[in-house]
Image (cartoon, rainbow, N blue to C red):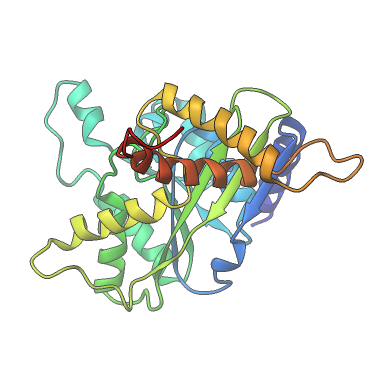
Length: 276
């Protein structure tokens, strides 16, 4: 526990030194007690896990791709910290072997045990870190973990909570980060649509919840255009900043970008005869 607290403190110092502002919204949606499965988008590799560790006011059990455990020193450090390895089907395909259906049995058991103890587990359901302007297709692992922990009993009150991480420019120092905690999926009241498979249905709902707290664009060019337009519109419509305030919050720009995204399809279908 002391090691975790120390590591979390060091991570916080490093993050606040590198990024100019880290704004957090919706942290009150994470309960102080009871089992929680955090599902987080994955745009910035190790930094994503550090942000969650620092922001979430509970001890978090991390999961990580099993390939990281191939390095002896790194594997020792990860095991010492309690990180649970997850074997991806794509790793076996890259190695030219057929995926073993039991490859994650022990890892799933570790996650289920943590949830039954009322713990908090972090998983990146995209399965990889990437630079795409939208969420990658989600794997079903997070949903299967939640369903298994809930159905086998012991994880009463389990919540699946989405967290969206948005970076102004993730590789640039002194830039801004927005951490948004979305609406929880409470397993005690969740029901799949009739005729649907539970894992796929829950994965689809997780996807929808994550998209509500992330930016998702069709292409990098569309993302860049939306960012420029959102910044310009927010500057025009927003309140005049007080003396000494350099800029608006990143949250304001991102919310404007989301509104522009929702409006764009309607504008494309607008009558061309309408005056400009």
